[in-house]
Image 1 (cartoon, rainbow, N blue to C red):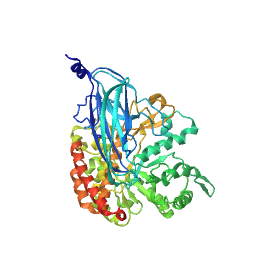
Image 2 (cartoon, one colour):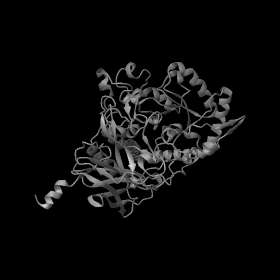
Image 3 (cartoon, rainbow, N blue to C red):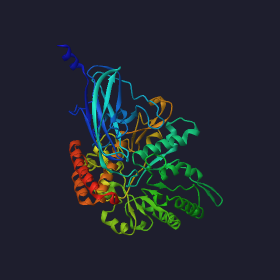
Image 4 (cartoon, rainbow, N blue to C red):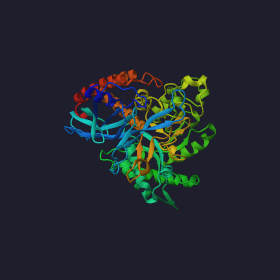
Amino acid sequence: MGVLAALIAVAPVYWVAAPEEKLRPDAVAGERRTARLDAGRGECEPFQVALRAREPLVAVSAEAAPFAPPLAPAPSLSREAQLQLALPSGPDGHAGDWPDPLIPAVDSFVGERRDAFPVDVPAGGLLALFVDVCVPRGASPGEARGEIRISAGGRPLATVPVTLRVHPFAIPATSTLPTSFGISLPSLLRRHRIAPAEADALLRRYAIAALRDRISLHGMSMRPPSVSGATVDFRAYDDELAPLLDGTALPSGARFTSTDVRLPAGMGPRETAAVLSATAGHLREHGWLARAFLYAADEPSPDRFPAIVSLASLAHAAGLSVLVTVPFQPALAGAVDIWTPNLNCLIVRRAPSEFCPLRAPFSAYAPLLARGDRLWWYVSCSSHGCEGPVPQRAASYFHGWPDYVIDVPGSRNRAMGPLAFRYGIGGELYYDTVLAYEDGDPWVSIRRFGGNGDGTLFYPGTPDRIGGRTDIPVESLRLKLIRAGLQDYEELSLLARLGEGALAERLVAEWLPSATEVELPPARREALRGRLLAALDAAWLSAGPGRR
């Protein structure tokens, strides 16, 4: 064997993959060796690079060359860590090793270098890189080129050319689809062993990570306003939330689209009414009232309806909206302002008595929406089965739903945003993003409610785990796919606002025929998005500044 042939025989294999492709250890090499990205202004467009070693590789590193011309910052790089999942998430899930935590090369919060690189890769092993390109809203349309360089011990291994096409249209910095995902500072502090004085700064990093991904959070510190006699003190609340609600937390000006009302525990109706009234006044003064809601109950049974009606009457007297995670129920008409049913209770697949005792069809919401109520939804363990093994007779029910667990195709993690456009949904709630922090280590065990990653979209980025000196949130691959879905919603909504609503509806119907048919091959999705981008460019340029 000649020298050249010998070198080729041991050279690592590398390829470029779409963000929805989950690169497991046995991933089959693809044919793409270059990355071609299309993004509107204000969008982030990721891709993955996979490298399989034919011989052991020591001290593998990666770096991103800046774009020329500089239409966007240089791509950010993360190494995809693999989690070992002992059990599958329902009938469609699979046990084994799965990628999800994105360990940054340099974190975007305090700028510290982390332990993503260098890393050793054994013979036959797979290294997966997540590459994220974010285009500022003020960027000029055009085409730029860069590259991703991979080396081992300083020796070049692979160079991946990257072409970025920035389209003329721009999406808003703040999501036009309201979201509210849960988080809890007490949960964070179970996994981040930090000084009490550092807790609020840590929570702010999590909030900024969510906001960059177009997600607003509820819960947060969980601290209610301080009440002393007739005085309600909102200073701590404002310190925590004002930058997120006013758009000063990020250079883009992105804002939280929602915020939940907090009540001190143990109050009677009179004290509750007074605090609700003071809260509404404070929110109104700052321009936050329209985004606020009182989360009155979570999946209540009918015996709790009278208490919800009583609390809602106090909230309404103060001018506050009420959210309940429940399908429409006549007994709650007039009490609930933001109806938030489970996806599976809104789009019913089989007899509701088995999987969704309380349900209401879309037609039930029409008169409610006409009078000003809002319709949100949420995805849950009902997408894969909430407890132990799913009985064989029920397996078909759980096939194909959107889901936020790890061990399903990425297209199912991405689907909720474009589905919201398809079905005319007004907002999305998700119950938690750090659930597995409460009673374990998500890096080791992330299974809750029958699903791997259900309720946990972050990982605790502690220095002992990822290097550096400062605790940060580590984002998941799923969180980036949720962001991609929210950007899909923005593109479809923008096309509709520019007068091409029928075309937007046709495209999304091809992409997502129904709420249980969301698994689309990446090549097919890219082709549909190419048609969407072409239509957006034409509509944007013909609309003129006054209509955009």
